[in-house]
Amino acid sequence: MRRNTALGYIAGFIFFIAAGCADLPPIIPAGNPLAPDTQMYCRELNQLFPPYSVQFVHAIELTMPGSHSAMLMGVVNIYPGQQAIHCVIMTLEGLVLFEADHTNEAFTIHRAIPPFDSQALARGLISDIELIFFKPRGNPIAWGNLENKNKIFRFSKPCGDTLDIVISPDRNLWAQNLRSPSHRIKRRVEYVFPKTRPAANSRPSVFPKSITLTAAFPSRYTLTMTLTEANCIPDTNHGKDNK
Image (cartoon, rainbow, N blue to C red):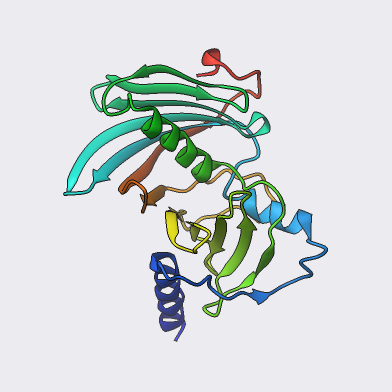
């Protein structure tokens, strides 16, 4: 009986994150949206988005339309306190294809080899990294549960987009769905955690073992990221010396 229930949760979770429907999934409310429990949702989202600086190393499979794919390595330093990123993408042999720094003040490309020499692609890549690793700004406009018992936090973006963060009952599957003002899915990020998870009020020491980002439009591609290494790094002034 328990196995059937677990399979039902997983099937419902996969159905939700795969759906590209025109309507937002209805939420069964929890709490008062006019007086949000800031500590509660910060505590929850800190389990997905580290509030401290971390260096991540991932093996990356980039899949483009037409079944074109490439295997890469990615090193990303995130500095949440400064909303800053240092990103390096390289071949498995160690050739650096792309290296950039991004802060609230500047976006600096240090190296870019085609196709990463496109400004639009480079900025899109940094935007995707921000989506994957940084907590949404502001308070959720709604939170609660879906019919399949997944927990959900919904955020509204200044541009009119909507962002849903969904957590499975066992907390091993998380997802973000970024939708346009017409509710069309633009980005979907799926996170798979190992079965051993920290307590909800503890400093996260377990990170997603895999992350899959699917870009729907205007460009279509998929990044499948398998965690190789994660280390805390100093919260010093961001720059190239913090690699």
